Image 1: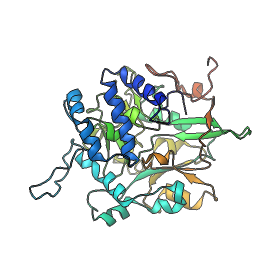
Image 2: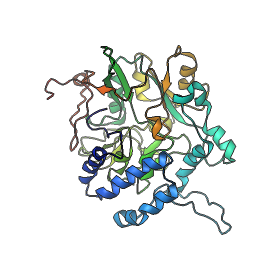
Image 3: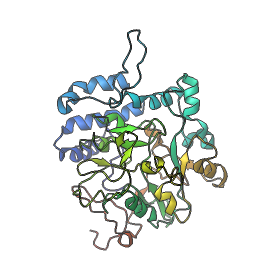
Image 4: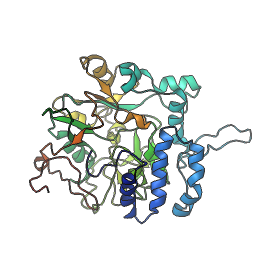
Length: 387
């Protein structure tokens, strides 16, 4: 983990201090953000109900933001008590996918191996009778860390594709060592995990962070985002970034920023939150050759990244997991958090005692920097002037 990543234990003083430091600079209520973030992770782990979570913070969220559009809001009901269709912008339309997944008791690859991939939203919808409220498509990735050579081309391609400034690294390649007295170099390629139960979405007061029903991609509506950074402290993976750059430095994105009816593609405008979008603009493109692809997958020289529908046996990630891993172990990152991440890793899972170390090198070649405005640097490579 990098110096800017959250401490693992949300009950610790270190985590609370980290979260407070992140939110305080925004001008929004830091205590509220810390509480929303911590309890969003508790909701994901099943330690707090959505009803309890909603009630606990409703008044404070209304006072701070003037609205409370969190996805834990009660579903609108008709006079007979039946649920009404979700209303765009209220968060209610985005809940069904998570609710269906939770009801079905979806399980992860870390526990059951490849068979867990087949626990899909398709089967979940069938079990609950809710096959119209949630799509049977769940986009995700299989990332083979044993193949990764830490060339950083995925990071460079991500920034170029999305028009990000050099410091907004939505994709990260982290190097770590295990406490096993070996000199083996281990790498972890870490984009957003596009969780089916995303604490970042749960904690967002304005419903700017949302999950697309049609494909399960977690996105940010830049027009709705306030830059409060509550999503950042709610995420256990450290993948959210507040865009500090001036508009003329960022936003060199040349594609369509609209995905569906929201502004959610390309670099985040100044003062809003950005993260990996699974190249949502490609998924919505009229060019069929771009659909089902990502920039990072395209450039990987060792075929370590496989993107596609995790519920489709013929998709690239499912085919890789079924045919190309030669008995290697698989896991999902921090699966014990209950977030239901949709990236499956092939290779050895970093242990609890793994330590990130300097490297890999290569930022200079691709004009990538670790020094981010208003933030601690992120440990992604070797710099000669490191302290």
